[in-house]
Amino acid sequence: MPPIINPKICNGCGLCVDLCPMDVLRINGKENVAQVIYPFECSHCGTCKFECESNSASAISMEFPFLGKPYKRIKY
Ligand code: SF4
Ligand code: SF4
Image (cartoon, rainbow, N blue to C red):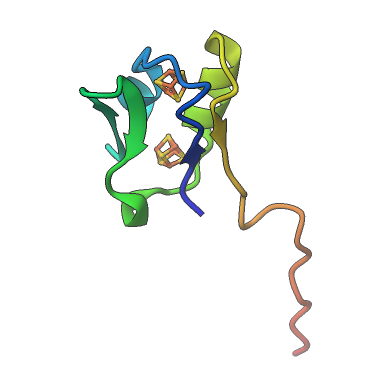
């Protein structure tokens, strides 16, 4: 899942936009909040979420699809 941005918390600082390695995010000029523009390009690296939290807000939530779910063992 790509990040979900809470527009009530986002302060439009743009840090997530600057740091996203896949160029997924933009600042919506009208509302001054971050938006996911290219959701299918998201690599789920988590940079946006962690940097947003360390900066000031917790405006981003996301599920990490590859964590916490045990892989099935493959029997040979
Ligand atoms: S880093 Fe957080 S507060 Fe800043 S623009 Fe991105 S979502 Fe909004
Ligand atoms: S999880 Fe990584 S690739 Fe996806 S939007 Fe955030 S910074 Fe960009």
